[in-house]
Image (tube, rainbow, N blue to C red):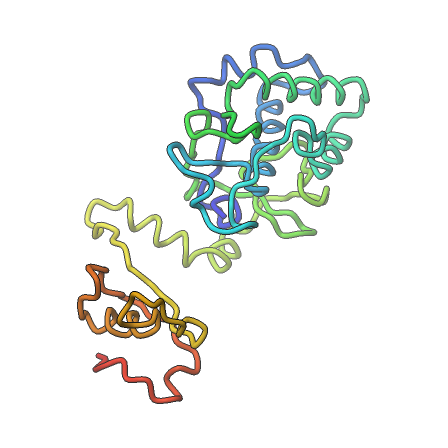
Length: 255
């Protein structure tokens, strides 16, 4: 989403760059293009949920598809997704060069330079990545799929292989300005500190009650939304309701 909104790009950690690219194969790309090639791979892997925050328990991060999905070193499409393989075919004309790059990725993952091994799966790790804020940079956009990029090789879109061109500033602001403005304001000296909100969904599907509780989940949400303490649970700031209002559920006075 950071790339998609033209806010920032996720790149290799500058402190590890010398180690990561030290043994990169010699191909028909210059040093900067090699880094762009690697960052395209990073983005695809991040979008496929190959990232696990440090100290996180994967089994407490949602259900099924919500959880991070690591890289299986024995699955070729995990290491080199089909989408990236097609991108390599357009960027590198030599089949030998393409195979060198693919072999390099397999060796890099096994070397554990920018990934962690958890339960026989590899995950991108925080210490190997760097967040490069690009709020005021000139962004590129694909004419076919509309995806945004901070940089490209020969104007080729890694996602759909379409043509990438520089985005009109006014169009970019019209498309993503609402989100970019919030980030820019957060960096201003006079800005307010960000704060969190606790949200919940008010739904008839939550009316089941446990035997050892006085209220079902919906009732607890209603009480917490009115700032009434329930079993030491914090108040709810935003309660999302659909047809609940229409059936006359009492959620107290609202301003």
